[in-house]
Structure formats: C-alpha cells, structure tokens
Amino acid sequence: MPHVWQGDGDAVTQRSIEMVVGRLVTDEEFRATFLRDPHQALAQLLERGTHLTHAEIAALVAMDAAFWDRVADEIDPRLQKANLKS
Image (cartoon, rainbow, N blue to C red; front, side):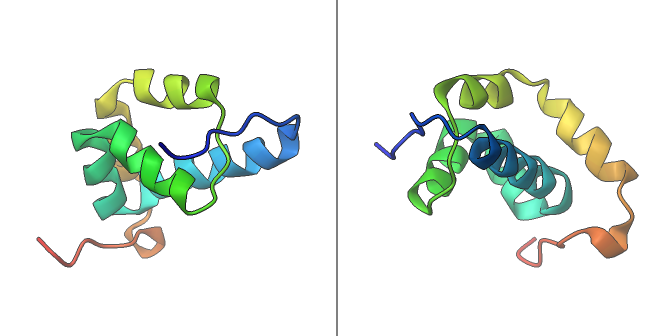
C-alpha cells in the first residue's frame, strides 16, 4: 500500500491536490485511468511521491466522474496532453 501523507504540511498537500486536479483535466490518459479505477490511479501517484491525505483521496474519489470530462472539455486543447494510445 502506498504511503498516505500523515504530516502537517498543508502547503505540500495543497500543491499535490492542484497537481492531481490539473492532471485530471489536462491529461486524457490519466483521467481515463482515474475514471476506470480512481484508487489505483491515485495509488500510482502516491508511489511516485505525491502527498495526499486520506480525506483528500476520499474527496477526489467521491467527485462526480462526469465532472472531470466536463471540465476537460472546456480546457483549450493546446493545454491538454493527448492520449496517443487510442
């Protein structure tokens, strides 16, 4: 099980949340992985050193899955990372 952040670093986890949200709306492949299995997608980030608390993970997983696609549709394509595998 990846390490879930237990520390008192609000700034650290805020930057991590911003990074995760940014990836969800700009990285098509990561978003697809997250929508298929959010726990696995977040576990991969935790394994790479992203700091998220249990509460932050629960909040991300609880979000309406369609929200991420709706927001991504509004982002200028020049700011998005295309999924070249599909």
